[in-house]
Length: 268
Image 1 (cartoon, rainbow, N blue to C red):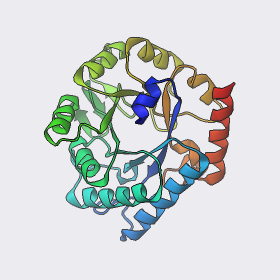
Image 2 (cartoon, helix red, strand yellow):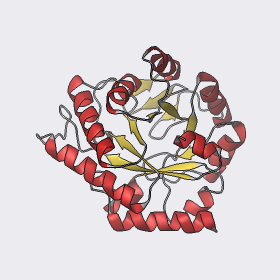
Image 3 (spheres, helix red, strand yellow):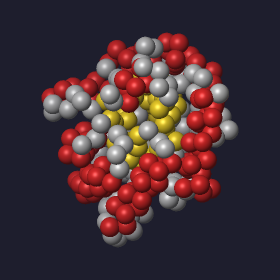
């Protein structure tokens, strides 16, 4: 049973983030591929040891992104790193190719990925790179054409780091659009990485959809119990890093402490 079905059955799912070091061709690339793979595998193993249910690999450290699509160099290195991660742990693996759904499915199809995060699934958003059009329909049709329908789509609604072109669109409408387009689960976030997802927004999304709802930012050991009273799953990244720095490795102590808090909160 995959993690979407597990959430539908009432299980609370924790997804730990593996933040790749900057990939080739990006501003902060370190010049060697081996350290990228070694860090990704080490972080994945720490997350598994801490008790996380799944892992999502993301290239967030490639920022700033100067093109709407990832380069072939980025895609190939990302796929290699994901394959190493998949072989090193016994957990479901997902990816977030930072909004590039085409790259995400290319990587997912070649590296045995089980789910993909698509941040700009519905709504026209405005971010640091300008206007961002939704790609949900394209992502769903691409999955179909490539024979990758086993890959689940986790779709953000009103995603962090961006603003709506039309701020009057309620989050309930975005949620219903995402469900109608073909998402398998919805992700709700705060305004930025590490910022707590508002409980009010979480409740509004949960009440407006039949899909599992996942917290996508700001869950910590302190608020996990409260947020898991509403959400079905959570993606945890910066809370597992020293100083919240996404370039740092996963901290074993923080990861284990977080999972202990989740187990106590859910059980309580």
